[in-house]
Image (tube, one colour):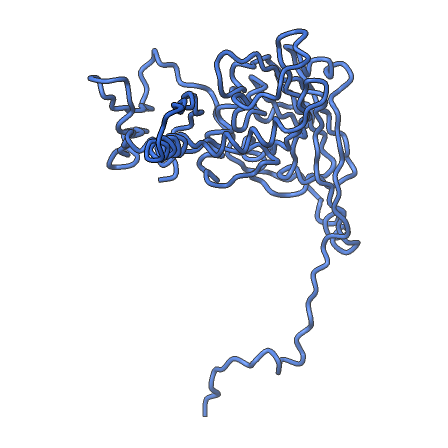
Amino acid sequence: MTEKNYRLDPIFQLYDPIRYSFNKKKEEYIIISPTVGSRSQLNDWGRVTFEINSLSNQLLLSDAYFRCDFKIKDGTPNQTHQPPQTNTTLENNFSPSLFTEMVLEASSNPIETIKHPGEFDTMMKTVLYPKKYDSVSGWIPDVRDGSVLREQVRNVPNDANEDRMRAIARNTIERVGRAANHGFEKRVLQYNNVVENNRWDNYVNWKLYPLFGLLEHRKVSIGLPYKIHLQREISDDKIFFGENASDAKLEITNLQLYIPVITPSIEVETRIFNSLTKDLEIAFLRRNTNLPDSQTKNNNIFRLAMNQTQDPIIRKVQVRLNNDSYPYQPLTINPSTKDYNELYRN
């Protein structure tokens, strides 16, 4: 008689060992400041360098971030009694736009070079988490039509009756509702909220992932020195959002690199070092951030169907890559809704 196949309830599996997982003994951060010679470039054109030489520590680079302390100040001199600006603030994800290039080195060998990090970091985050607000990291995207309400509030005549007052109030509420850009409002509250000597102090924690492809390799790094180079540019016109006539300026007061250091348990640490008998090969998708030359013929075509009879408005969007169109049917945009963010959410 054949024995029936059956699964024993775990409570009766008396001889199975109980398994516990205490791999991490401690997790903390090392804080790295710019090299002495490059710190002076934080508010000037030039290269800012961070050297990571913690060879004995187990670093988790995929969770590393820059903490950028900054001040928004009025660029007009001697304006000591200016009230805090509420019609101008920093752009969504402004931090990477402070630089024109980022280079990651390992053992003095360039691993990845990211050109135009502001544009590409925003593109990747738009795809990965478009609806996720994270005020600490600076990811606070604009919503609806992305505008700021600039219409003057209508004056109420002295002889207005009750019906007239209701009509004015209703129209005002509708105009404000149509122009409501809650992302802009959140950034104003986040960045323009502390006033000291006509300056507004704040900070953001700008994460290196997903900009560098190497950070897709979510493993600890041991015994390997790294360098990160940031090519600084002064680009107040790129990083501020709001009234065009504003003289707002950004001043970086401090920039530091935070990297998690993982201290494993004795058993895990012993196992890791016993396994390090040869070089490790790491495969990752290197980011290609070279902008295509619009003068040369290539298969990367971005099709934008415009309304030529009125002000230029994007009606349909489709991407053509290697003779394939994405999506198969172009995305259609209805400008009357003024909710263009639905483009990337779909």
